[in-house]
Image (cartoon, rainbow, N blue to C red; front, side, top):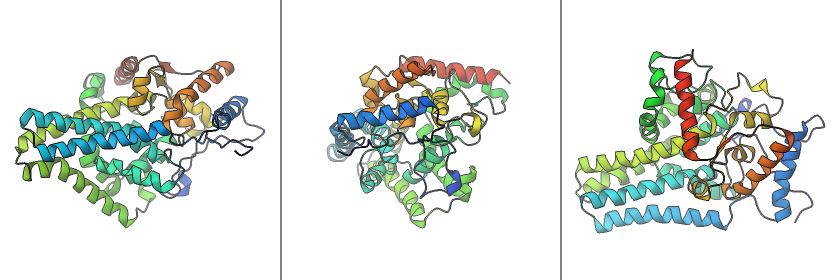
Length: 379
């Protein structure tokens, strides 16, 4: 064991190999003498947790069990479909089981690997990051949008990709309001159900070929990433749609129904897991990056946790309900989040820093819809 704990608090997005260097965030946690005491103490306590416990911040045994379980359920559902060829409703049930496995893999495995949080060996994370592509979403573009387009600019209008409502939604008070958005709290769940379908068929292609963000326009994507984009989409649509029709002789209508139902599950689940962490009625929407003296205060103002005392939610949501810790320690595996959240809560209370949380996920969803209703009616 070394004499110094490994730094786990790091606000710099790991995208130097993806986008131009000017995209780096302005705020990070350092050890300068002028640093506010709360960020400095919080960093030391989070770092010391791993040092004192003599454990790695990367994936532990629980994480590798989750990886094996998620991949086994997905593979098992596909094997069952193509070997047993169940009839009608039984086929849909097994197909939806595969959809649940995809949801679990996206939240638990793909997201952590995207942050190089599973293993200290980068190649291991890169391989596991292809789970995105197996689930129909381009891993390369997700990494850019999530790191540069979210972690470096939380709740900043015009920069945070998570606030892109395509004029269907108004997620921030800094965006102009459209008349139809007064109903956005009513139609929100319908459009959230289309979230993953949007990524599979539209969003990835738009980001590659018709980018709206400046950092995407400045980025020259490697030729291999274009190849992976089309190969990944082709693979996904082949095993999800084409093969069941060609090999199993299933009705295209039945396959379309099963496919849409699968993505309703994926879309609703992933959308609500993420939307309830930043766009709720208690979080803040800064007008600029320079509004906070330190990036830690930015995170606490713009992020909310939920159901942190519920181990079932934490297990299935990939720890994303412990979202403040995730933004403080993005390179730490989510299986460590529960004790780290306790440290965050205690330190925030000690220094009088507001810690935003909801006791249940349903309460967090309610407060997300309250924000949508307010933003839809206020100018």
